[in-house]
Image 1 (cartoon, rainbow, N blue to C red):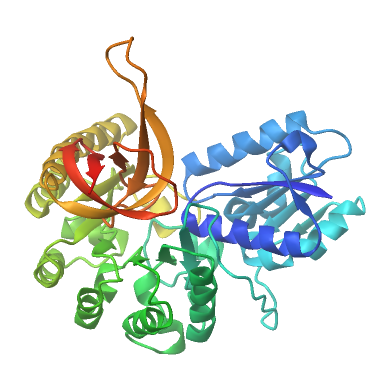
Image 2 (image 1 turned 90 degrees about the vertical axis):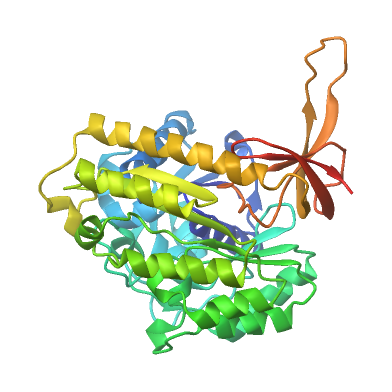
Length: 445
């Protein structure tokens, strides 16, 4: 049996898809990148916001339109979990629905589908079910390592707890074992992910467990140059975590700190930490401990009740803090979340105008931050090759290499273009010679 598997959405979804692929490979299924050659078509869907659901719907509908009578189409992941059997009403031709909390049962589930039975499996896995799968990313020497799943934060706008359930942290020994396996495969970067990495261990009554996990990883895989931390909830970032990051060169001086807004009233309606001065102190502490730290954040504009005054406070905050990276999202109302029933919806035109304003503001800051890198020599992980076209049509394209520095997480941040043809997968020293809004240009030292 050949299977085609496509994963949509965030890196956490990517990890689940890769884990399913490993289980399928171990069971004798054969992967293919061509859906026309597959017997089983699996789409690991994203259901976080409406735009993500639209993409999942389009991919499923296209595969359903093209599939042969002998092919089977299966929806897995977050949207499958959220909609359950209701997905059959939206997608004609579905043969199976496997929720994100049941991905570990993909093999017996598919065996049932192969027998010609339509099936839906959602809800939570039985507590006795434990599947050991190494977390390895199919990228150039970079791997996502999931340390927890689910979320217990009370954010009013977020459907993740409805989809994933409450926080469930993985044991330290299992995470360390996976990290050692990845190191043995030549991994150059391990990216720790969860819905909230800084909440790690809280479900077990551990108040500040992430620094201990980082210490264990640093000791276990000293040969891995980069350990990167994603998705840090601001209230859970402790001084001990900051000191641990500053102390170990392996831990990237990079932190993704989704703040969502910067006006206390908006944050209260979001059920997020509303002490903006505390956030300012946290950022000061991070920058004092690691002057070269790259800080990423994300904001939601157009949240119900957001006034022009509240939005301008967000603009002032962005000008003041000058984050290295910022993601901006227009509010998406999600059924089942407390925010869905909030009054005073912001008109779409106004929401989009605020999105554009904040993005333009951050673009100028991003360019300034990148120009500050000119003259620095950075370690860059080479991930691919390309060609640079000349303005002179008579001049042949110049080969270049494409990579990232510690300042950039894969798929969401910028790139470093190197004026040399280099083998992907290696770490090289690069002097930055030119800066653009999101990317850098350099030469190998």
